[in-house]
Length: 393
Image 1: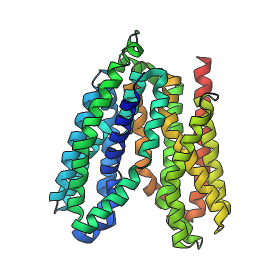
Image 2 (image 1 turned 45 degrees about the vertical axis):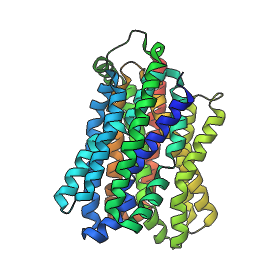
Image 3 (image 1 turned 90 degrees about the vertical axis):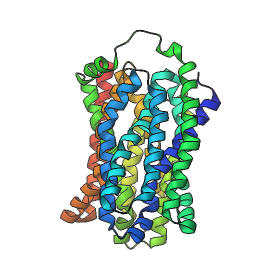
Image 4 (image 1 turned 180 degrees about the vertical axis):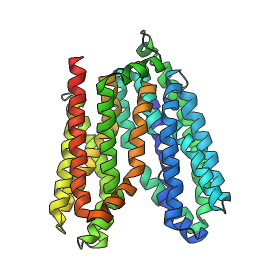
């Protein structure tokens, strides 16, 4: 079993990498817009491109993890991400900004949560849930590090110094911690991997022939799509209802902390309840959150209920998704399987803002909210069928 020190090392490393890559963009968006003179749409295009490239690179990262290169992938992916983020300080042209974010998508596919979770499922087996729970609890503070730290540094010395600061953190803190924690996970878990099993490509091909794979590849992306829509469109949704801007910002800000609360609650019952049941309950919580949002209007109690239910429900998914996928599809070649499942999940997250905008333009936010219930219903049915298919097998 991996040591507590190694778990903390991986958790802190993931927190720094999340803050210095994905959360860096929204944290410094206004600074880039003001200094570089580019529109939010132009800037957002670079971020969307980065996320899509990260999704496309996820299957390759999974195969490298199956081949035993997980520690090197996490460590050198972080080093590459640090170099790319540092290079943002030199940007003056749009094409440079897009090029760097495109390459950063490849680096992110090597060191963010997807490869880390696949590496831990491979090395820790049944103990992966405990380790992933600890890591996701700590990474819940990544947004605070990015927004508070990034804006503090940018306010004092400019955004170029801020990106250099995050690059330095990734290089000096995250990369060495990934190396230490990853080596410990490899060293202390040889027994988990000692049995025979399919290689990554063979396991993936076997998984692709199973209905359960395609059902999970439908269920979890629907969750990513619904959460992405809510996060990116919550403020205009509430503004349309006449909710005070300060209250709306408070509601949006509360979803992240409620994810941590959901994970803590999951830890309190994980010994008595299966992860399949926990995952199914999280779908129900998110559906209840949308119902609360539909009924809320400008009611603070119902808005609070929405924040608690959405945050707690989605917070559990980060832990449940890799664990349930490994339980249903097996741990042999799980890196390749996880990478294949990550492709539609990350793509759905990237598509969420644009899709919601299209639906809004056609039918308003009432249609968007109704569509969220449809997405969650499809997710729940697909998940239930995947579990049933696995049990029959």
